[in-house]
Length: 143
Image 1 (cartoon, rainbow, N blue to C red):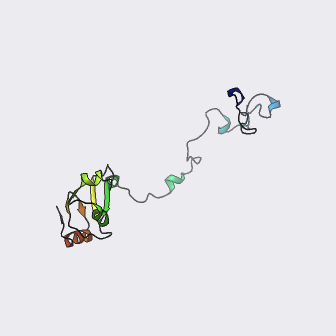
Image 2: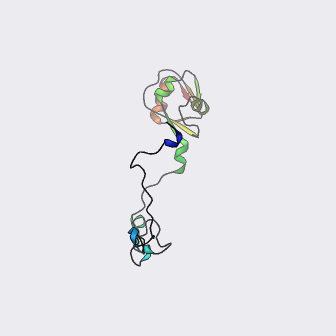
Image 3: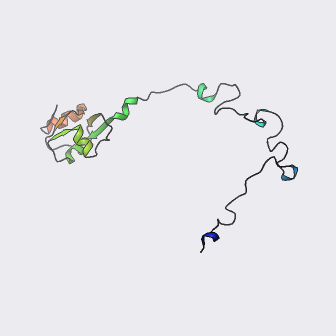
């Protein structure tokens, strides 16, 4: 095989459509744009979603819901995740180092999922009411 012999498979490449090149090409004169109207003119088109002056769909539909910007900085961790850690004192930095919460997380909350048997001390980490009871029942504390 030579570099000058490499070519695409037969039928893989199509010749570009050359418009406005005379009557014999089949796309001469109006070049496939038809007669008159906005779309036949140079630069004549409309923005995406424009419906000819009719109220566009994105404005007809009601606005619904709310997505808080601060939610992406919140993270959750389960009781079973805490049980896997082999340390007594758990804080946000440790959870980030172990990869249990994303690096951009600013607040972490423990949720009651799984069970905890050993005592752990949480510093700078929030907990739900059920998780707080489970941690205190295991002999741990939340600061």
